[in-house]
Amino acid sequence: MKSSNPILSRRGFTRDASRPAGAPREPQLVGAAVGAPPAGDPYTGFGAPRGVQDAAAERTAMTLDDVVVRTATTLGTVAVAAVLSWVLLPVDDANIGRSYGIGVGAALIAFALSLAQSFRRTPSPALILGYAAFEGVFLGVISNATSTYISPGVVVQAILGTFAVSAGVLVAYRRRWIRVDRRFYGFVMAAATGFVLLMLADLLFSAFGAGNGLGFGSGGLGVVFGLAGVLLGACFLALDFRQIEDAITEGAPREEAWLAAFGLTLTLVWIYLEALRVLQLLQGDE
Image 1 (tube, rainbow, N blue to C red):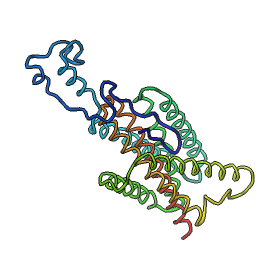
Image 2 (cartoon, helix red, strand yellow):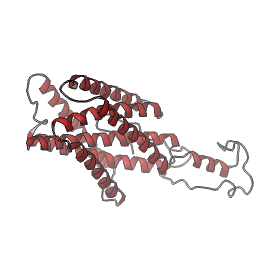
Image 3 (spheres, one colour):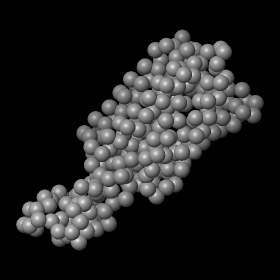
Image 4 (cartoon, helix red, strand yellow):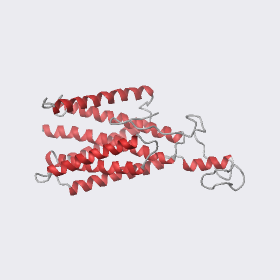
């Protein structure tokens, strides 16, 4: 199943064309299948008996460990860049314009890199880690500003909220409380389309003199809209889990674990920003 993000679409994983869709890959020992030392290329299995080729393919297939390691690397890059931008780009009365300018520029670069990766046929670790670094700069500036002008504890609350949502979705998915099928996918995509269109309409109304736009940026309506964004992010996280599960089952190439890391990072950033907005509105009303 192909998964998508509220901001942009992502390519689905590829599978081993030699096996039917959904057929599990059964690991084989290199020597046990043929009863003799392997022949041919020891790394690719090319020219070797079928059992050796299967074992070589098994070594290059994506595993859950690959996804975990690359996701940790990508999210770690986001976190390090965010901390550095928080420290090096202070958001105060003297530097707020400069810091905001750098933050917005980093967000635009991150968006451009994410688009570049989405249109590639294969994952590019350089593009993905570049996106993570610039996205981290943007998150650091926004988080610093929110902490400075709203509440010092709101960023920690948003991070904890993101972890809580992620853990809840993972538990619900593993226990099959969430049934990720075509109907679920269609519903989420329709909801995401409507959400993005409302965001664009609100932005346009604000830009052309409607003041507060459609009202999604403040008050009770803003809180409801933000909670809807968090819920939408949780739904996309379930789609990401299903996509990763299918990719591992179908024997996707190992390098496509970077796609999984990229997708999870996009979704978690989305959830964090929506959680931060909700908490900002709630703290601002107190």
